[in-house]
Length: 361
Image 1 (cartoon, rainbow, N blue to C red):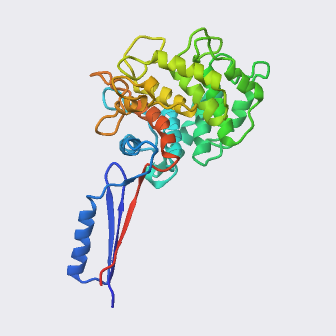
Image 2: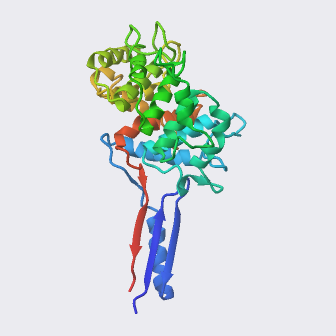
């Protein structure tokens, strides 16, 4: 008779878990199996392939760190200086969105705490967050659509209905003033497979400022880095717009605004480079067909992608500003970094579980 044994080594952050089964094995053979399990702990999870080799391990570390930030009810929130955190619909929506972009399942067991998944937690938080705001509905809606949910019926709301009700056909805007909220509403429609009115695209394109970028509000006279990267990602990445002149002008703006030390600030305010602005710039450049590692975006021998990765701590989190006392908010910096890095992985899950069968005679 042949005895059988098998073990499963699962990457379940923040700690690895091992499950093993001994069937019809003698005691010493089962002991060998347990020894094999012990040795398997030294085997790292396998990172997904990326078109830039340093991205996959960085993303894998960040995802493991993010799992440790999930709250007992499945949600995510901003940590306070006293070490406490409360659920946030906005942060949870961004987490679900980032995870779905990376090929993770926000409704699956890996992202479930206390019987509630990250997607479940977002559904519970949505009614008191969205109200009638198309931007909030868009932030939740894009995450839900990517995660395989139904934005037409989520958290007791029709998120698409909220977005469509806010549309002004005379301006093409889903928000009268805030361009950023307009981009969220538009992306939710695109992610859901709903045709966006041509005027909504024109509203985005015509909001480009003379200096080459975009600002967080409509009708601006100066740009900011964050909005410029965001709009480039949306126009090129989701709309599929091919406009070399407009994107070239925007890339020139980003090159001009890049800090001498590398990375970007928001642009219109003084300060040190931060991970969020750098991530949005990198994401926008790549989506529009520019190489963030190209010579024009190199500072001190490092390309813009390298500069973004330099914000990552050994534990996996990305800091907001890489200066003592300015590291927070890590969770927002990490989410923005993951969203920017996701395209480098081609939609693959960054860390895959290892399954190793063992059969002993």
